[in-house]
Length: 489
Image (cartoon, rainbow, N blue to C red; front, side, top):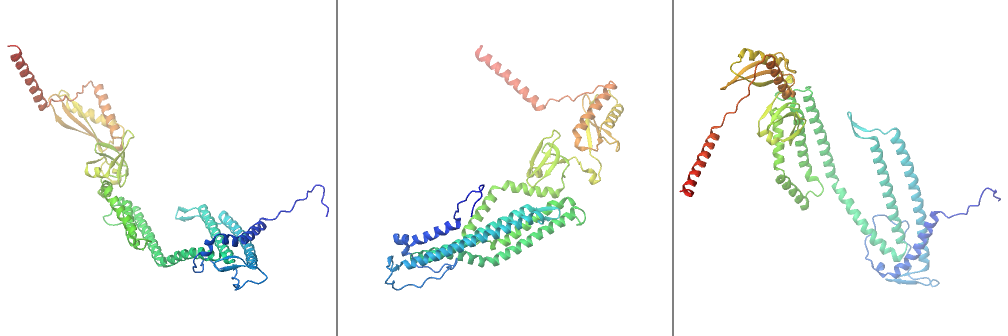
């Protein structure tokens, strides 16, 4: 056959299967020599037949005496090896290698087709798992999981075939049959023990599965019930809607704890001393190291049912005035008027005084909150004019409601001035400090227009302070007199 001028002759190269076959035949020919060179291999104890897999080919009948035409090779342990046995073992090894290569090629082809099907399924028909409007598992994650399961299955099948192949090859030669029996029977015994333990544990697994299913639907029912209470679709006498969410969380925590106690005896290793010791250690660690945390959690639960404040209310706690951002189990978070975030432990909140400015008064259909300012005038200013100034200034202030009308009170009489207090209702309690500042500015502007002087309170000296000052003066005079008597006679 003539080749065209543009084409070059390509030399033929043997495939990789040919080299694998050649390597397997070479190893099979060297195994008896290696076994004769290392006497340990022939002295392995006899163990039960391997449960991993039987030999691909049956053992040849032992030859009681070698043929007179074939000279026996060196032997160990009373098992002579002839050239005929080596040739037969090498042939069986070659056939087993060919079958292994064909099996691996078939497995590769099959799993390639399976991966192609999975890819098509993932791109066209795979749908994510949803619970209502919430996506639990995406379609991409499901495709990745199926691909990983396919790869793991492929690896397990290949390992099984390789183990059967090695067991068969080692059993083809008398010198290595003891190695096959020893190694693979040990591995088979371990795998048999694991498999037997798994079979004996199946009833416990079924019970744990039932507990998990019951707990899952119990938690879903509790969540559904209290969501309906929160939406006012279900009404419970004496139960406020505000309590729905925290009560649902508490009920779910109690349910989880209950089912955990029920499932604990059925966990693997729950009856061992090590498992019990670790459980006791963790219990002591939690009980001794979280006393303050537990007190804050209990206080947070109690605050939920006291209705002292709500999310969005403006409160004063431990001298801090701010809007409630969060009512957690551990702390209560406030945001002050200067945009600072303050976290107060719930134990301190429960034990301290709480002043609520009732930001959510509209929800409760109550009277709006009151903003007040104290002003000081001398006795020569008529109280009627003071009332008029304060009332008009309050009505001119932003976020002050015209109804109910503002009112003025005589708070106290001092030596040089009278204390007046103007009170007004506001529609925006979050701006309490700014409203009070603007109200003072309005009062100041009114007084300047009418040429009325305002006064400030004069601090009165403390009686104890006066006594301390007099005592120090007397002591200094006595010390000076004593010094004159002793040093200036």
